[in-house]
Amino acid sequence: MARSPFETAFALHAAGDLAGAESAYRNIAADDPRHGEAQHYLGVLLHQRGDTQAGIQLILGALEANTGNAWRYNDLGNILAQIGDLANAAAAFKISVDLDADEANTWNNLGSVLQRLDDLAAAEQAYRQALACAADFVPALTNLAALLAQSGREEEASTLSCRAFVLPPLEGKTPKMLGIAHYRLGRIADAAACYREWLREDPDSAVARHFLAACTGQDVPERASDAFLKTVFDDMAEEFDQKLVGSLAYRGPQIIAGLIEAELVAAGRFAVLDGGCGTGLCAPVLAPYAKRLSGVDLSAAMLIKAQQRGLYDELVEAELGAYLRRCSGDFDLIAMADTLIYFGALGEVFAAVRDALRPAGSFVFTVQLAESALPLGDYELSPSGRYAHSRRYVEEELGRAGLTLVRIEEVVLRCEFCRPTPGLGILARAPS
Image 1 (cartoon, rainbow, N blue to C red):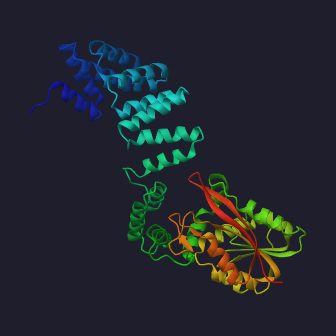
Image 2 (cartoon, rainbow, N blue to C red):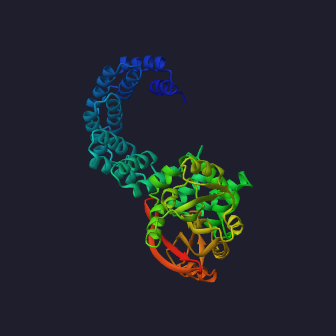
Image 3 (cartoon, rainbow, N blue to C red):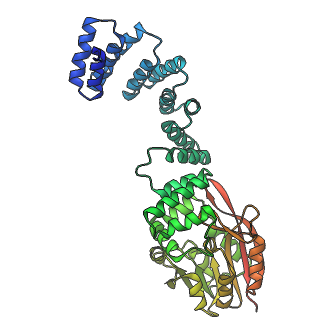
């Protein structure tokens, strides 16, 4: 079937042939001055070619002939928004949604203009109306997330951002980030599918294997593998402090400080080990107690950052358990902040700590607390990739290792996706 003159003009316009489309639209208008669609799109085209005022006049003329056309008001609003006439743009969008309240795109456009006008409450309402029309409309999800983050409502903002992230198009989005987003949304099976895809692409990935175990509960290791820890922490060393302390509100050093201050005098006379020292966030807390401060970590990149603090007398790249087994009776104080979240079974590492401590030496550490009853009663590898433990299990393993519990406090370790992560801060002591 042959195209109508307008269809031909519109096809030229859509193909980017603005000169040809303009000529075709003008021919239609010459033959039929009341052809509203040709007049409207000629106005849009003139705006695209830089003659915005002439274009607006044509669009307004088309609207005078048909005031009930919602999409023409939407186009007018877009043009007015582009030239910075925000008040009139908002007015055009409001007319459009009055005529067609089910169009998510127009509600989103209205929200964007209202946000630029700093009418945040009305903008939020518009974005939410867009999502009521189309729950998976990515621009509205993204815009509402940004608005909520701007107003301090980080938890809902992160949920909306993740909802947007997992929607198509998926090109350029890694299975790792898609898995994290699905986990944030509570879609653990979908997260597991992402990690399986990652393993298909990279069968040797220790990180993918670890997170797949975390999401399925299958083949869960007793502790995170050396390869996993090296890969994760080498990759994040540059931004570790900002991400952990800034984004995650990490409180490990403060918790360690509170436990030690209650039991020890900062007299600079102890041999101190920072176990799993990372970038050295605990070094300022431990240094006042230390005659000699040592740090051990698997990540060479983390140790470079720790060295830059200038507070350690020794930094060792090693797996923590193996290192402790070489240090019989070497330390008066061993600290582990957010280290045992990468250990499930605690018996061996507690025994190694006991052997590395001098008589009456102190062991101060944090663990992530399981938020519900554990199927096996001891520990679990949560979908976050971190181990969580039951209080009973931690206390029992300390006793088995010959360590006496001195202090135990329920604490908040960090915030994950704006939610507090419960934990335990513990100080135990070796026999005297």
